Image 1: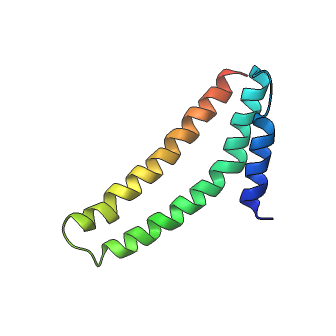
Image 2: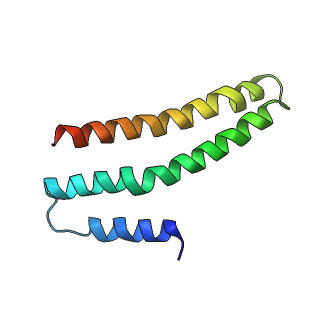
Length: 93
């Protein structure tokens, strides 16, 4: 079984509840930060690295898209999700 399948099954099992408590929300937030985001970050980093490599052979708008826009958007989204979830956890302490 792949690592992603274990993570997915863990999240699905955690989300099958009758009542959503603050403890559960904290647990899910921690699981996303600790288990899901690192895998996504690795994938995004690898993808962005390939985009930047390919950007050198592109021209015009495609070069800007591959070298700047897509990497910034993807890396920015991951960063924002990490910061927001981390701040939410800090607030509940």
